[in-house]
Length: 348
Image (cartoon, rainbow, N blue to C red; front, side, top):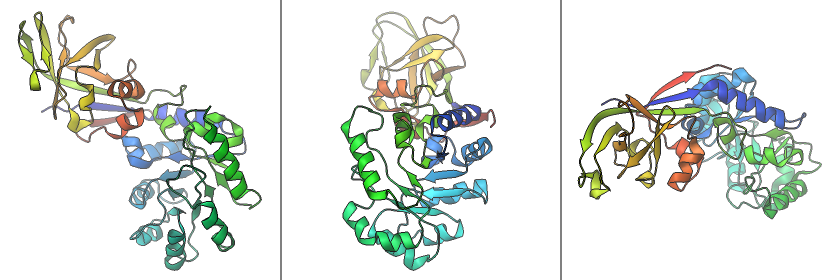
C-alpha cells in the first residue's frame, strides 16, 4: 500500500526560531524544545537544523530523548531534561552529558548521590501543580542546592496562551519571590510566555510549538504538508453507503476516492464526516468514518482524480485541523504516524 508523504520545511522551523529569538529580550538566550521527537517531526534532523540556525541549548522531556539528541548533535550543546533525574536515568545522564531539571527532593537526592558534581538545573512549581519543587521544599534545600551551582532555575506557565488569565501574573510574581537575587540563570517562558512580553523572558526562553508552526505564535511560518495517496476511486450511486456503520449515504452520484491513511496514522476518528482535504486550491470533504488505515473523500467536483490530496498544508494548518477534531495543534503534530514517508527540505 502506498504511504502518505509528510513534507517538513526545516527552513521554516529555523525561521520560526529566529523570529522567537528576535521577540525574546536582547539579553535572553533562546533555546529550542525538541521533546516528543521534535513534536513528531524527527528530533535528530530538526535539532541539527536548529543548531545550524544558532540554537545552543535544547530541551527534551526524558533522558532517552536527550540521548538521541546528543547523538545527533555531538558535544558543545546543552541538553536539558525536563522530566529530571528519574530512577534508571543515571547512566544516560552521565554517558550522554545531559542536564536534568530536578523536580523534587527525591530527584535532588538521587542526583547528588549518584552523580556528584554533574550539571543539573532546578524546576520550581509556581502554580501549575504538575512538575517542580514547591515553595516549602525549595526553602528547605535551597542552600544545599545553590552551593552546588545549578545551571538553571526554571518554571512553566500554565496559561500563557491566554494572556488575560490572572494566573500568569501570579506565577511571574511567585517565580520572582523564589529566585530573585540568587545569581543563577532563570527560565519561565515557552512560546506563549515569550509572547507575553519581556518581563517573562528572564535569561533563557524555551520556544516549542511556535517553532513547528503552531499557536499561539500567529506569525509562525507553516512547517508541514501531509499528502495522502489515492489508492482507489469509484462512483457511488444514490442510496448507497460508504465506510463503516453506514457513515455516509449518497443522495446523488458521487465520485469517492479512498486514501491510504487513518487513525493508525494520527487522523483522529473525530474527523469523521467533518474534515476537508485539498486538491491544490480545491476543498474536498471527507465522507463517512475515519477507519484504521483508510479514509474516503468526495472528489466528484474535480475534473480528474488526483494522485494525492492534502490534509495539512497552506490551506489547513495543524491548529485548523485540530479545531475540526476538537483538539489542539500539538496533538495533531505529535500524533502523526511513522508510516508516512518523511521528506525534509530547506536548511538553516
